[in-house]
Image (cartoon, rainbow, N blue to C red; front, side, top):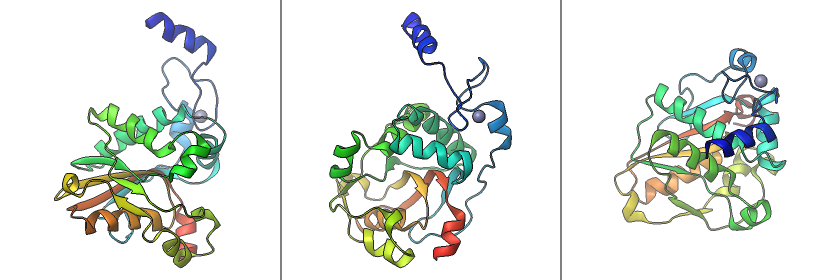
Length: 221
Ligand SMILES: [Zn+2]
């Protein structure tokens, strides 16, 4: 197994997930420069309906935006490990407590097209790092147009209303649920997911995302 990993490293040397520079042996996930220069999101400021707390790694801009677009649309599937690992660290730093670690699912049609559920992979990687399991709690029951194609916050809320269903209400009753997602924009998707879980009996819903698009949030709310 060790040799196998060494061969893999030679064939696919690890690169910084943000700037794609080859990593030095002492670096993991990010190069030293990106680690120093990329502004981190701190605290859990701002209010999103139905979410008790939220946190994110970075702001959705520059090299972070490039990284997430490569992950979602250009086949950089292996980024899920780095994102998951860093999100796990962030959850520990921010003292985000939860009973169930879960994620916002994509529709089966989108999953079929892309070949994978990009957020499920991040949740599984984060869960592995935290030594817990990632549990699906929601199912997307309606395929809607991408949130990015909606003209404003009201349209985004309407676009996801009733889009999710709780898989097993008994399993989430009275539980604190942490939902992971890739990008927090207006919060419409995460708020609707949280509302669905709370209505079905969850005690509290928090969320953590790879990035947060602040400027868009201010423009559209
Ligand atoms: Zn870098």
